[in-house]
Image 1 (cartoon, one colour):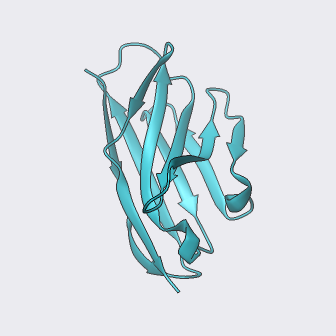
Image 2: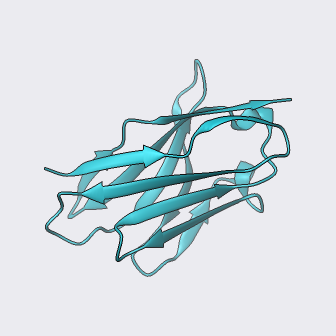
Length: 115
């Protein structure tokens, strides 16, 4: 059974940084695209960043230049380095991975940025 475990969320002041991690276990097949989504209170879940198996990345316009996504293939882990955080970055951040066209989600980790 595939399992995603996220960590690294918390409460910070605007301008500070956080690093999220998501480790995948239980997969027998290679992990394809890995990504992060976030859901602000009362809003839909939106894409933040993705990274392919050959480390091509995409970012939401709102986080370009501030966030960096990376992955460690050996550890089955994806990271999201978040710098210069803003209050509008507040939300629950979800890890997402695709394994042979099947999507898996983490349980979410709360990020709260106070201005």
